[in-house]
Length: 79
Figure 1 (cartoon, one colour):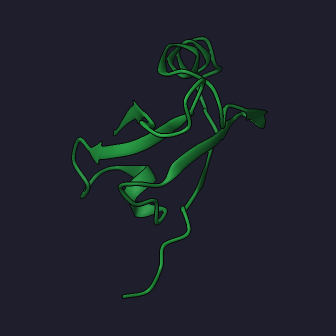
Figure 2: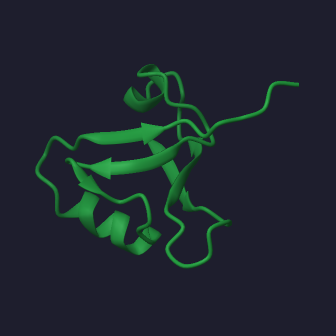
């Protein structure tokens, strides 16, 4: 499983970000290459890039058995 939280930046409706994995060794999301800090962009092709955590959870709970999540890695400067 994956733990999501609302992004702190962005003011109104900043979207959600991966906070942690319940168990990275068994998480399909982690195995797919998603990392802590990645932004949730879509649920079943519906844009949730600016959705609140409440809206994201509502969409996941009411989705069919198989849920397609699309993530984006934020750009980071190289050190």
